[in-house]
Amino acid sequence: MKSDLHSHLILRLLTLYRKPMGGNGVLYPILGFASCVAFIYMSFGDLKLSSLPKGLSLSFVERNGSHFILDGKPLYVNGWNSYWLMAHSMDENSRGRVSVMLQAGAKMGLTVCRTWAFNDGGYEALQISPGQFDERVFQALDYVIAEASRHGIRLLLSLVNNLQAYGGKTQYVKWAWQEGIGLSSSNDSFFFDPSIRKYFKNYVLTVLTRKNTITGIEYRNDPTIFAWELINEPRCMSDPSGDTLQEWIEEMTGFIKSIDKNHLLTIGLEGLYGPKSPKSAVNPGEWASTLGSDFVCNSNITNVDFTSVHIYPDHWFHDLGFEEKQRYVSKWVRSHIEDCDEELKKPVMFTEYGLSNQNKDFQASQREQFYRTILDIIYKSAKKKGSGVGALVWQFLVEGIEEYNDDFGLVPWETPSIHKLTIQQSCRLARIQGLNQQTGNLKQLCS
Image (cartoon, rainbow, N blue to C red; front, side, top):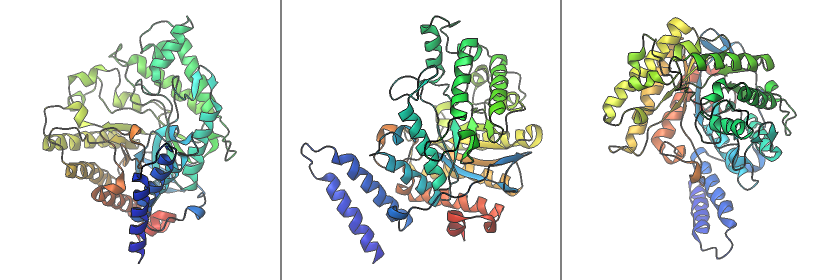
């Protein structure tokens, strides 16, 4: 009978969604959201929107050597990226999708979501100009953190982009140049210009000491935040030696820790090895060692609590077939776990991994194989108490936000094999930690 009710709900909502609206276009986002809720309802069972679960009591995640520790026990992470949460929380009509995404993640046993805590300059910017903030956008970030807490999800919050999307280091350089104080118009002056360093430090200070208008908790005191990520995919190509980026990371990680000693901190690296590294041959090509970053050297900085690695064979190799990419990915993942096991003695998180649907030989089944390759290696490392502690897929979405999608994104409950694999990994890691130690969704999901 429940199945019949589910089917009726879906058909009714989709029928409404497809009906001509005349001039009343305002109904489209409302009905689109309703259909999104219906999909969640079918996929995960009864979803009582009038009585969503109250926020779980969270503790700060800590580090002990190469392990994450939560309440005195090892913690392993299965999670995801939804970079768009803040942008989609500004409008009351779209905020519901953020709640649906967070609740769906929790119901798949996911525990950490990585998202942007920046939007510099441009449309609906959080930081309009150096030191000037849009309170409406800040309240959207407040909402994301409060909702994550309500669903028992922790957030990995990234503070700036190396890329131009959402402003990034390019916007900081433009600001300095426009004010006539910039040393150079090069994007890499973000890392060495004293004025720009001050801009960024002011931004960091403002974010970390922000008092959430919903919870009343300063960000630096909120355990909902899993960790801070300094910068997404830093590169400083004007100094291939890596010295400029190394110095900047040392300064900025020290600054963050001087403000916030509660939270873990990572850099946001892609995992590339520098020209002096004995592992430069593991890189996807010679070009990778010329970008001014070095996984081991950068990650060895004292204030960096855990390392990060990204996995995008489609971006790195254009002539390899799927099986060859798979073999390389296995080598790439194992190499970084080895670095952290044997040299760095820190946890490693694979904070982005994805397979493009634009590949010439792409088949939907390849995504499951690709994901499984990565998740299996992490599981084996965790089972041996190694440093491979988790991974975050790029990226999960809900229906109705196609403008935030890319060739890696998917709605997980629309792909049963991915949905099943995601839950399987959540439960495998939970069992290593001990199901008796779990609460809420994980204990119920995996028992």
